[in-house]
Length: 164
Image (cartoon, rainbow, N blue to C red):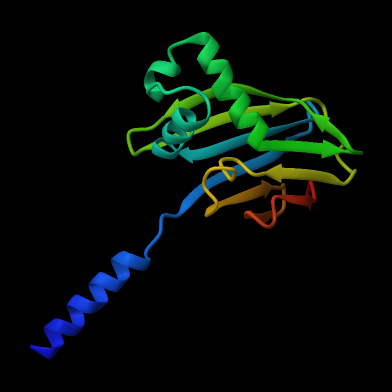
């Protein structure tokens, strides 16, 4: 009986103190032929839908993605949450495509303007952080010989990365 009571107390305390976690993942690679960065960002479709309804317009994400003007707002939301700077100048990103998967994720495929390979590059990755304070991001920079991973959290939204 005591064991059952202990389990019940643990279960209740876990439910009371549990919190949601929000994640997104990005991969970035330098394309030497175009001198551009190619980026993929993976977000939870549920989080994107909730964020869009709270911050942009109260409409289901599926409907928004069918409307050209709302799709532009989604694209702006993504590019506002992931930005690249070199020499203090923001590099414009364009969304080339997006994909909704059956397992609940949305992938955005972005491309930068031409960028200088050997200059310090600053990345700000604070997508959804103004609404989801628990939001955590991970950026993996893919190189020809190795990859580097950079975490981004509420207190660390910007990092200088190495393009390799």
